[in-house]
Structure formats: C-alpha cells, structure tokens
Image: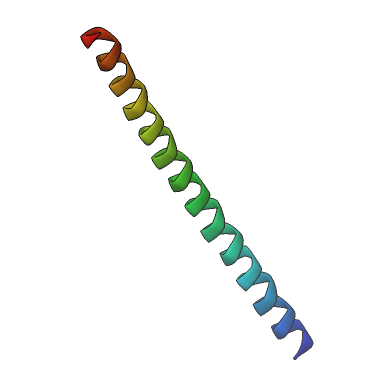
Length: 49
C-alpha cells in the first residue's frame, strides 16, 4: 500500500513539474513576442521622427 501511495505522489509531482515547465515556456514566448512588438513600434516611431 505504501508503495502505491509513493508511486502516486511521484506521478503527481512529475505532472506538476511538467505543467509548470510548459506554462513557463509559453509565458516566456508571449513575453518575447510582446517585447519584439514594442521594439518594432519604437523603430516605427523613430522612423516617423
């Protein structure tokens, strides 16, 4: 019984790590996209000046 609980805990921990990993990657990508968009806006602003 203890082995089953241990396996379940390990599975849940691995699942949580996977989910946080995927979320962090997606958040980083969206932040990079946002920054790139801001940079392009700044370039356009400089061109207009």
